[in-house]
Image (cartoon, rainbow, N blue to C red; front, side):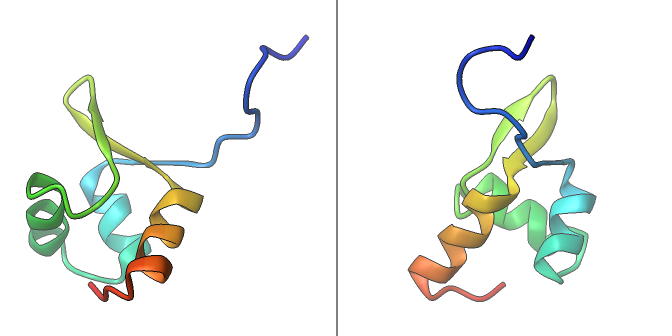
Length: 65
């Protein structure tokens, strides 16, 4: 039985994985995360972001990492 709400969340965990997804280095990813430039949250001391939200954020904002 699946819980109610969204299923199949495609999450990216950790700054290294987020950096790889963006195609930038780890320092740049940390900078963007700490400044709130990426729609991510800290969970248990680790950054996490939904893949679709990350892609949509950069497509809609016209930003480039």
